[in-house]
Amino acid sequence: MKRTLREVAEYVGAILIGDAHAEVAGVASIRSANAGDLVFVDDRRLLESALSSGATAVIAGDFGGRQLQAKPLLIADQPRLAFARAAAWLLQENPILTSVHASAIVAPTAQLENCVSVGERAVIREGASVGENSSIGAGCVIGRDVKIGRDCRIHSNVTIYPGATLGDRVIVHAGAVLGSDGFGYVRDSKTGRYEKFPQIGRLEIEDDVEIGANSTVDRGALDVTRIRRGTKIDNLVHVGHNVDIGEDVVIAAQTGLSGSAVVEDNVIIGGQVGIADHVRIESGAILGAQSGIPSKKVIRGKGVVFWGTPARPIKEYLKELATLAKLTRHSKGD
Image (cartoon, rainbow, N blue to C red; front, side, top):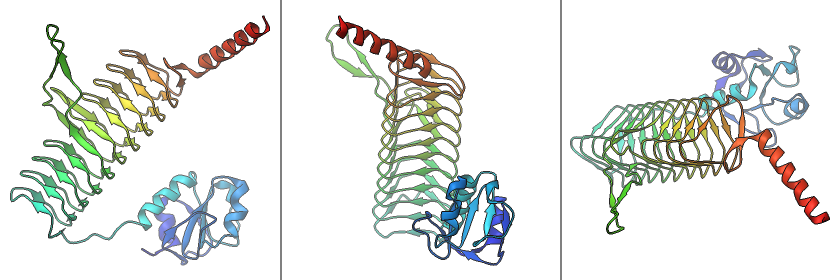
């Protein structure tokens, strides 16, 4: 979708220096940019490269100045954020009329709002509803009484179990499974055998959540598993039953959260982190890659980086490593 630079600047709240009528239709890296593309720099050292690239215009920070340059500049306080917002705007798909592929199966009691698309071999079961301008990809299975909000993107081969609720603007990538049974069993002390504990709770996913490819989120055992507004989950993440994840949490790939863990707002979790049951991660904490959190532990410290197993503040962790290194050297010396 072509937009003038004046329109882009107004949309992202940037100051435009240069030709307001020049048009852009896409975004690119500095290296691959062509005419009609928009690029960004958040480092003064890269400004010259951006200005000499094939792009039509450059989003830059205050270091771009207010003088006319070889290309139009859009000066923004947060150039990377402004670029992301411009990209989403320029690359957005045009709304389409409601379209259900001939091979899809939609139950008579399912409700599709305006401008919903349903791909090949998708199945939407009884009582499910899909909000306006949402899309259901090929091979998806949307269970009974599932509620999906507006402007959602459910990519291919996603399975959503019965009764799950998704808010508006939720993105679920290919192969994800939402609302499956939690891993809950009771052991018979006499026979040693395991019997299934009821998994009859709910899954609630709020607005603006993104869930990566092949991730899995279990519904609650008796209550609810909840992922709150704005949280972003990478590929191959597992969220166990009764987990409560706060707002604007970021979780990197291959992390696992055991049952009844609580992750408060604005937490950052690195890749391959293991979080045991009934753990609480308080607001703003940062868990480094491959950290391990034992059962029922509380992690607190806004902006504090935790590392290792069991996870502790990184300064403490590095001191321990240094002490171990000294002991090793001494033992070799002996």
